[in-house]
Image (tube, rainbow, N blue to C red; front, side):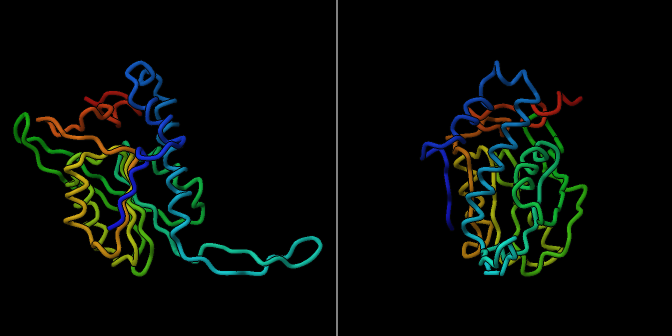
Length: 217
């Protein structure tokens, strides 16, 4: 399974990651959402290099040019709510993609004990398509896996790209163990060392949904 950790190379993602983590800059929700979107755009560009292409004739005002266009049917899937601006970044580049949405949330039984629940799913058929499953925070990997399992009710994709802004090492190992090794690639802005007793990534950046849209009650 291919794992891409953008923090291992210098790129604009590193700049946007620094701003996302900064406790002072986080006070600007619009900037926080925009940086999630920008990282989605860069990841979309990098993923585009792995897709199938075909050659078509394009009529210009003067002659016919050979052009290479994407020959993969893409489905962009995201997990509510923090995933929305991240998803938009991918959609800005893959403007012909179909879209899927999953609602996954933590249902707490005790202060530090919770189940991940899937409550809502809207998706096109996935058979033979390229699925890009995007969620900014990959803490344990459980939400990502359950969302993937829910999406499989709509068919089996030919290729899967898991995209996150920040992941824990534990979650990366979880994805490697629970997703098809031969058909999955993982794209991460940075991999952090651990999660705390509340299953938040450390150092991480906090609650991405709250930072993007305001604190929930």
